[in-house]
Length: 366
Image (cartoon, rainbow, N blue to C red; front, side):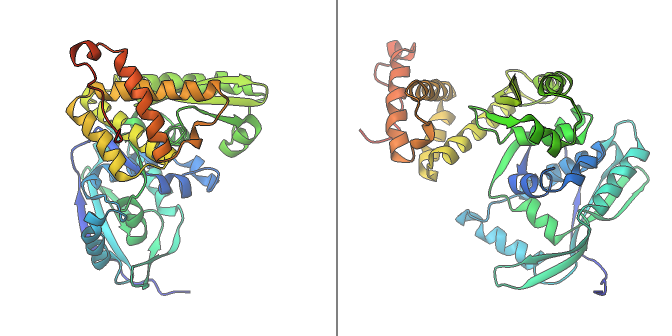
């Protein structure tokens, strides 16, 4: 058995003000918070999930992408600080009321205990030079509550997965406080990755993975999906429609038009929507950064352009659906060429054509 050395505290994060959104790493959701991968996450108390969201809130200004050449220096600094010696940790400290406004110490304690035990063991990280550093613990380590504060350690292994986010989803920061079960939050995080044209899931498989016990798909939809949809409609940046056909359930996500959660501004919601939509187009149609930057530049100058792009894309979806052709067959320049045609047509039908004839956005050279 390895001898457990004393933890080395490299950094201390103190509580920051609550953001409206958090960047939730896709790898964290897919690899560790997916019930298909680790069924035990379904036992996570909601306070465990709230603590994870609070951690992401407090490190939001330091998250970066290792693939971004401009942020290579940031990656090097992280490696020098955390990935050069064993048992390197960061300490987190925030107020009890940040997790529970009612100071529910009993359930916060349960939440901390779950995170202490989740994936508990020796965790290994490898830096760019190939050196392996190890740390002992679960998702968190050495948690304490006293005088209205919570404090704990997070190892270099887990901190790397939280800070270095090459792919992420923009999530409503308050969603873990608006839902009552971690299972609901994990479903919401999964929903953020469902394509806009939806997905079909087999009821039996879904029930097995998510540990439900309903007799059929219709009963499941009535008792689980209906209520969750209502909560997401009210409190989330994204919700969903669903339909049942035999053993299959069709889930189709959509952006909510209003968010009643206090503190979430229309500007923040609009930013979320733009970020997610551009990321979706980039991923689905193999666009490069210069393509996305051009679309983003048009949108930043006039937000009505975003509505024009969405209208054009919907027309493109309808066109290919009528031809029974998958839109994913349009990749890179081929997608841009067809998208450009629809942008022009949408513009010609809009009020802008009468104000500025022929002033539609050019996303590729004529």
